[in-house]
Length: 351
View 1 (cartoon, rainbow, N blue to C red):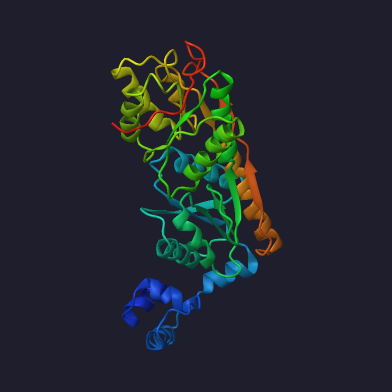
View 2: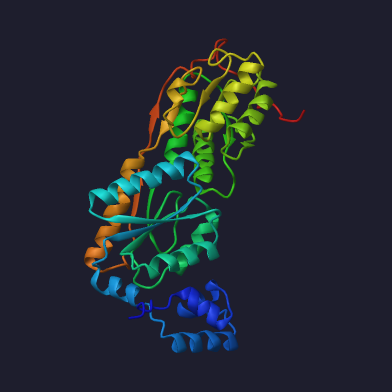
């Protein structure tokens, strides 16, 4: 007896029609930007092969799948990795398996293809760890009826979201430094396309403006200790003018601390430093780092709760937004300015 023939998948349709996987996805989802001749070729291949999205239809109709799909990005970074871990733990506690698609870059086509891949597996719902603005538009292409939640950032599109309050976290960090007596607070920001970086800049700026303090020009980093080190060298050159700095993540703060130490700038005696994330190593930095803690476990639990409600109620039209509060973790890297509050306008970063 011959081996049972497997049912065709989307990749088979793409090969038969001589088009890309993305083009097949666009035809199946009814996107208008497909040429009529191409659409006809794809539909003919679907008919010839007998391709049907049976698993997807069954999962959406019965909600009996015990697998959830997760689309993630750059899990080498602490935030996305911790978010993913929180989701996995919450899914296991709810009796679900997790199928993960990790993307090298988040863009509309990549997210769309990942969603199609997970839909073909018959997942009951999808969690998209989408910290970049470029991913927001991709969430508009979710298949109709697919339970989904976006995690991280601050999305405002047609999908439920769960995120940490980045603006509030940045305000906590900045207000902590102002309360110690610093005249203003400098900022080392994350990459501009990241929604979390935007939120942290917004919170830092809002705290300074609310206190009527000078707002220095942010120094842009890329989340890495190396970029923090580069920013730290520039700050060290202005040590007489800069008394406090809020760094958008702990890895960059580590680089800042290294640069300041090499330049002979004492922390916190001459410059106070606050990070963001509370990575496990931050309490062992030299000095131990004051930082803002994100509750990734709560993010995971809330995202699963939202997804379970959509699955149980068979309703994906009600969009929820859950914001998890952050917490300041004071340690030894911050202190009042040794010579009293710094005064005067922010110095220029020009060298």
